[in-house]
Length: 442
Image (tube, one colour):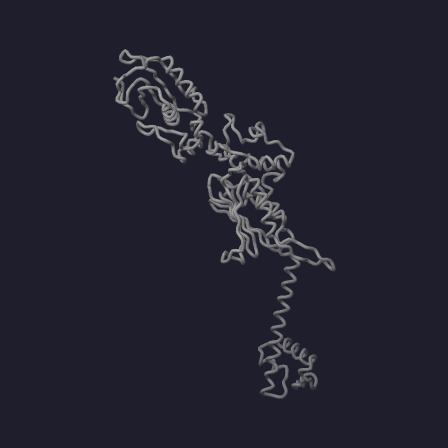
């Protein structure tokens, strides 16, 4: 008598289409044994034609399961209780998850063993199997979505005189040797699930929206569309250099471009959240999901060190002349602000990376602003002082410099300067000389 069904044992009275999910479940878990010709309660029934059952089993498994599972499957003709049965031994596969070709790499196509039952795997179980098989690099892992198209990406490649055919896709890491698509393919596909959300606000905070957009599709399309939107929100200011007018943008093109590229190339796509861009009246903020990689500090990045999270994606951007070399983006942003009094900022947390681009303020503009401010303050102070001096006539018809010093609590030099200005303006008449100098009101 053979043992009852359990996590590594399955009985089937006859060969049915259900054999596929049982083999999948064992290969995706810890292996097991399937006996054809044995009832669920363990009674040996036998099969009429072992060779036919073995041939049908082999053909069924070879044609319906991906990746190829036959190297982990052994189909044997055996006898139990003097009756012929077929014994299928399934080893745990090394290229999990295995799935039904017709259903694809999703829960309805992937099975695992739970106790004595073969059940559909959850999306999380599938992701875990992919990570165990492919490693922990997101772009290299097999995509859960395999029905992908690349119309827009092919157009962009063609515009750069580059091919995006089957051979190129394998070279770039878009397609694996078993012809399945990687997550890099998902990022470049028309079905890409990740988005960029951009919002424009009225002032310096998020109190009032002016506009908002969400950019979808392949990452290369999102890059183009979002950059166009950012340029529409990059106002031009007129600057005068002597007699000649020169229009200058509020934000350097290079800074916007590099900040956007940084968000797309370096973000952590194992998170489903969107990349966020916020445009305020005085700044643009770019928030990318995923902090710095282990061992890399903010100071290292500012010095130009780059440890790329998505190396193959970066290689594609390099081929398209979108980036020049690793680690130059932030340095380009800093260089774009070299003539500006306002400077970009970089903020890093464990799970996010923020670049803040302030509106450009030319250094001479800053000086001019300070001069205007100082002049304005001076005029206001002068006005207050004159009013203070004029108020003295309510008590006396003539005043001296010492009267002004005492009344306004100012130095001798300051009192003399304001008295001199009021004489020039005709508000006071000067009488006498030296210590005998007095002033009468006009």
